[in-house]
Length: 278
Ligand SMILES: [Fe+2]
Ligand SMILES: [Fe+2]
Ligand SMILES: [Fe+2]
Image (tube, rainbow, N blue to C red):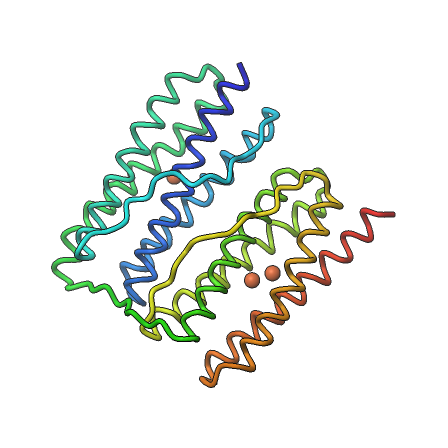
């Protein structure tokens, strides 16, 4: 029985994951502006949904999936993107309605109804953005920059996306409150990094490529922390190298700021590992 519910909730989770990345892609590509901010706010609501679903899956004895569902990419204009986002919400609404019917647990039904009401509201927002984007002349600000700077930024974006998934997974599977709290905090910090690097990329005439590599899916705290320390040390060194290589002073200081955060993460995880090993 639980297994069936876990499978349904993991399908919902895949959909939330896809929506988050689809919407972030759109928001970053539009640059700074009111509509981009509103789309980012919707993506943040989807992150809360993802969080609730993952916690419920763990409470049922399941493992939250890191698989991303289908995204609707493409579209010639911002207005087309907004239409794709309406369709994404349509799918979410249909899926939640189906799962509310299929699941017999009142606590989970209540949660899914709560999420469903958000999705309906998002659908209305995106519908409104279809016209608004046309009237406001919203543009795709991304360019085709492919030089070393673009390479560095996309490397950083890929890394940040990977550790966001990794730390969220570790946060869901960890049993110690200290580990849970730090994983959540640092995942949020990595989301900031992802945003900064993506915005820098669009400002500089490039296109953020929001894809990830393999995230560590250890389930024992000491194993998680060892993997997390290793990746933090590697990327701190890589950000340091990149900061020395780039000439633009704004980009240099951004990379140094992120590097310092990663050093902080490595130290913090090392302390947690010591606690775990005691
Ligand atoms: Fe959602
Ligand atoms: Fe980071
Ligand atoms: Fe980090």
